Image (cartoon, rainbow over the protein chains, first blue to last red):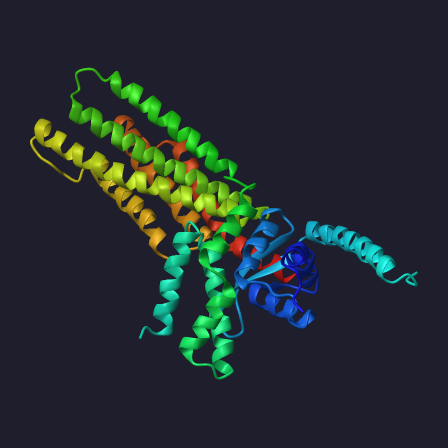
Amino acid sequence: MKIDKDLVAASSVPLILSILSEGESYGYAIIQRVRELSDGKIEWTDGMLYPVLHWLEDNGYVRSAWQKSERGRQRKYYSLKPEGKQALRQHKEQWRVVNNALNQLWNPNYA
Amino acid sequence: MPNLEQRIADWRRTMAKASDHRRELLDELETHLREEVERLLRSGVSEEKAFEMALSKLGAPATIAAECDKLTAKQGTWWPVKVARGCAVAAVLLTSLLIFKMDGKGILLASHVWCVCIGYLSMFAIGGLGICYICASWFGGPGPTQRHSLIRSIFQFANVAAILNILGVTLGMFWARENWGRYWAWDPKETAGVLIILWSVLLSALQWFRAGPTTIASFAVLGSALTAAGWFGVHIKLNTGTVSPLLIAVIAIHFVLLASVPGIRLLRKHAVRN
């Protein structure tokens, strides 16, 4: 089962912010982490991640810096700014409301 | 059969065209592409197949560029770039008006003065943008879209500066031949003119290399200091025989800002790590 394209797009920002809340990361690692978390069901076109990361940086949610990896490769690492943490809290609240509503509809015994 | 490096270079050219030469996006996508190709090679896939698979996962250049345009459209141009462009228009109008009033000096001298003035003022516009970038970087810096508009603008001004400086100095040579009987004598104004030409050409040429925004901004600030010394410094020295303390202070500020650049790099790395 593949996740619908619109749902993938809608979940991209909270997913990226949540992954970055685990610690600094870079594009390739973020994509791998999303695949790992969703068992490969959330399929991103890899290149689409970068416009979203740039949008997050433009809006002051994340910061970035080019750094050399252990293997000598230059990578652009991203980390959350306090504004990003605040945005993540809001996303969590919104997704919890949606999750709760759907659970009640699909699962009448859900408290 | 092209090798992997050749294929990546070809892809980068296509992607650069599609994405309006967004340098940072290109560098990130290339790093991503290389990581994926490496992973596939390690799993035993052939080089050709690995490149094709990685490219297909990365997405079509036009689609990525369109997504980038969509998401970054609201950010627009960074305000210092808008100010610099406004100043450039005002400078062109004002200089043209002054030249128009230079009655009886001849078209050759008027054209020389116009070209050199606009060329040198472009160098100051470039320096101003570099200074704005360095100052903003101390407070978190402009985002990728704003950095892109800044770099693009610096190169546009650098191209104008290089062309007009070369043209202006050449016209000056012909005027000197007509009036002083020689083309060139390495006097202080001419020497400063050549140095400013070289710097504007160097700045313009930087767009063909993979220089980062901080490096480009540093070259821009140095160019502005050189133009201030070469234009105002030489004129003040020749006309009054003194060195202006105000000019020294202005040039010193340029160097203080340049000295702070390594601190910005450290600050950014530290901020990401923590």
